[in-house]
Image 1: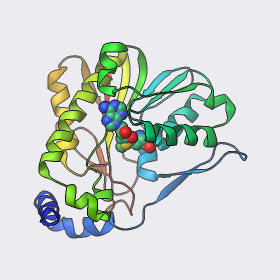
Image 2 (image 1 turned 60 degrees about the vertical axis):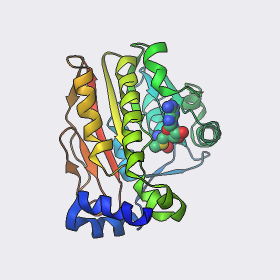
Image 3 (image 1 turned 90 degrees about the horizontal axis):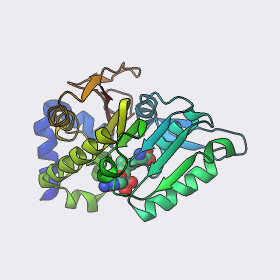
Length: 256
Ligand SMILES: C[S@@+](CC[C@H](N)C(=O)[O-])C[C@H]1O[C@@H](n2cnc3c(N)ncnc32)[C@H](O)[C@@H]1O
């Protein structure tokens, strides 16, 4: 029953495109190999995720926050961009996922990069209260519907509901508000998800632009991967048009 609701929902959203997209979601991903030194473990990250993390424009010396960092693929990209100068706080609320994150950091980063990364376990929706205007760059890779995983798992398919999308989009909105409040004036935020629905992507950005009107502006992103689609506020990389990469939605905001 839930099964067919999932397919019906996305069929309504994507129309005739859904069949090809559903097939591509079940196909092979395309990975970018991150290897920072010969004696460090390689980490394989979807090329669309790699693209999203690069869009934050991290430079050496910056203070960076990765609000939802585990298992850590994107955090590795941010850490390496700092080149040993500045700081990165890699946060994740889940203890089990944080343990995996710590292993990834220890195994993959060279000493100079590893020592400027700290790991925390806060509820990221509270960063705006406790760390107001503290960071130059913030990545919010938000918890989302993750349809690529849902479609591959009968257990997740059975749990899927439209209500869950609504709940997630509210959570995403609270996290993005916290990101805006925790960014310094002039600071930049990348909001990303691996969700298909605009309810978790552009709609979340539209709401924050209203909620924090006059405080933030959208920074346009340039597509680099063939097949990337421009949306109202950002870019959507979907596996049926991006050769298996994605899904990733990303949008960039700047605090004015
Ligand atoms: C999409 S995953 C992050 C993937 C990660 N950025 C990467 O590239 O490997 C979302 C993460 O958000 C964490 N999370 C969910 N709600 C959170 C919250 N309120 N505060 C902090 N972390 C949260 C989950 O534990 C999960 O690890």
